[in-house]
Image (cartoon, rainbow, N blue to C red):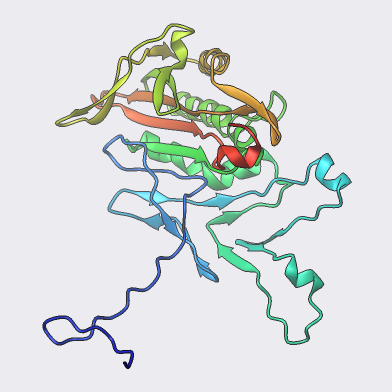
Length: 304
């Protein structure tokens, strides 16, 4: 019996469905929408294609995607590991180890290339990353647009370092807070700020400003304000030091764990949100600063 395409009842040959392209989540994002949701669109990344370029999603929304590979660890260098990620301008190339050992003169490289809005070498300092990726959000906040910054990657890839940094090399969160408050005061703009800090761990939300106290936190959809978090403690702040104190307070009770990839790893998604009322506006602007847990499966890090 000959192989033949199956024909539907209308007599037309059905076209095969093309395979779906791979999707990745953006690493750094600024969402300038007015709905107050914490959102970031899925960007399509395929071999030799571009992603990002401050892509406009609608009239008021943009997504900015950047990558900074981490350097090799001491243990990796001792094992003779090599960096498979190459950075050139706004392009990231993932090298295939088979390209190094092939002796075939007609060998075709298996490297995969990605073009993004910004790409930094591993040694790029925190200030450079902030200026290129997040400083633009300050102007948007003052103009009444919401903003979101988050880091995405596997455990040990440098997410918390990028977002929080250290005392001598602050990350995006402390730099954004201090720069935003300085700008508001410099321009003589009156403001009021309330902050909240929560984590999502094992599909459960927990208030990090509530200490060890277990408080019920639920999501509710308001007919005009959109999705709202109910039951989360909020605190008024007026200085950067007050903001840092509440972040430090929440970090003390955040879920962490130790495994083969990191001695002290954040195992939860943490969302620090600032609700800013600027001037005589009635609707607050939301600035959400998010530190995500590792994106790999528990089996990968030999834990769980």
